[in-house]
Amino acid sequence: MSSIEFPYPNRKQRRAEVIADYITQAGYRGCVCFSCGHASAALKETGVYVVDISPTGPLVANRWWTHEEIHRVWPDLFDATSGHLPLWMMLRFAQRLRPYLGASHFRRGTKYRVPTGSGETILCLRWAFPGILFTPVYDCGQGTEYHPEAPLNALVAGNTAFVKRLA
Image (cartoon, rainbow, N blue to C red; front, side, top):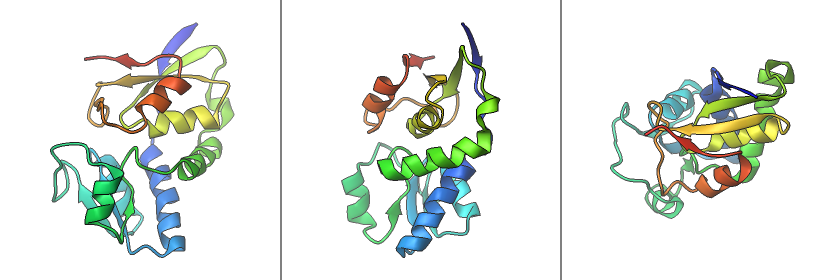
């Protein structure tokens, strides 16, 4: 069985579209997003108001914040932090990925190594394409750092063949 790096350009834009649609429909005034910078930038491109907490934004976090802490500080903003999306929204993201990538993009019997950070994208890929093998790879670049506090770690480990860390 061969194994290749999976290129999935514009994944943050697809994620941001799903979030922006929800923010607009639900009547939030905007969102708060803790990220490496890519997710926050993609959200800003949609035109929604974003409190950007990232190395490229005006605020930087020195630890992983919980859902509760974020809500306590920004109760009127949607929490768009990577790894904090509710399951139903991640399923919408998976549905958005399916036609964007298309099943013909994948070869059966091939393992795809997916650079992983919070775990959202690899889970959504897994749900969008259940017959394809995706392997999360952590610590292979900006935004792929493994965080023990990340809420999706157990779900990623339980929904993928194995977890590989490069560091």
